[in-house]
Length: 352
Image (tube, rainbow, N blue to C red; front, side, top):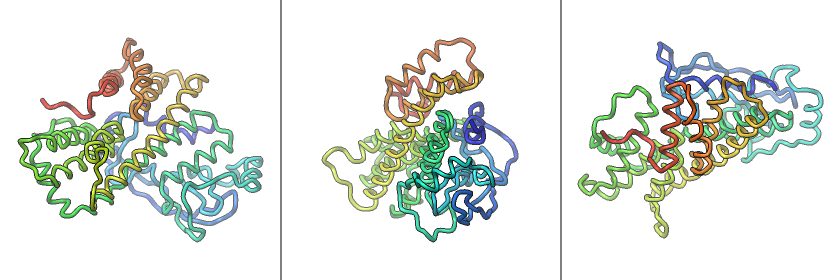
């Protein structure tokens, strides 16, 4: 197994919150020649990054600024060969794999890619990861490699809120809604802050005493859904969306478009997270996970099942783990939180 395919995953397993003086993510452009079809295109390599945006409970660290993993995966616009930077170096592709890629053309993009495209970043990140998964399968990579690539494909859906700009006077109205919330808890973890805000916004929208107009109640719910979506808390996003557009009710105007886009992102993320959970399970069964990483991977399988909406499977993995002695404090806390959420507790610290 080529370890570079999993370094973007396992390196995050033991990370919680990193504090330091790290600048925002910086990158530089690179000219790339595809080792399969010799097509030239442009990509980006990162020079520095940070983890100041907190960490989701499926080990995705958020940077302040650009997220490295969104541009770290490259795709050749012509033959669709995909992977990380090292996979585009001379000699990186075995002859047998080259033959298959050139003659059989097995890679199929889920969306159309323009033939004259010059920069791989113009291809949506989830599409590049989907093609990287296909490439890894042609290479005959093992389940752990596929698991991390598939997890990253799903996690790409947490970024990109441009659709919210369709809502008129968004900044002013959102600021007024947030001002109605109680003071936030002092936790430094941005994940906790985001999920706390989402939970309070959803509660605010349901409050008869809040004095909100119907449009502002709707906006509070939209903002709550986006806060949850940015952290991959899919059960909570779906719970909010169910209130926003109950059966038989048709939304109108910009909010309808925003909600439809968000629902599509949630469904796509759930698709990939479910596949990732299955691949991580296979990796554990086949003993492909290092001994000192097995606890974290077992937790991750349960957490992914919870996120895609299968609480029974989630608890089957999480509850035995919670009963074990000797867990590190942070993973024990995450397991306890995940169990509570699998049993119906919304994400986000409860009100004091």
